[in-house]
Length: 82
Image (tube, rainbow, N blue to C red; front, side):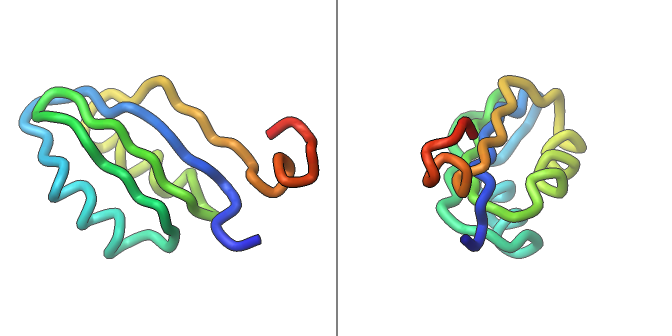
């Protein structure tokens, strides 16, 4: 399975721009199903990737990250805990 980690988190900060964040992730990280929504203080990220740590590192450079969930969809597909 390609892009096996369902990566979700919140970025809390100042002057955040969902369009800039969305574009940066698409340009710099391999993955799919990207969702970046919110306002200048809080952005929700949802992204399927094989390297969630790279996305987390980038997002943490923008502000405080929390409510982080990284699920292995390959395990879920087999009926195992993610």
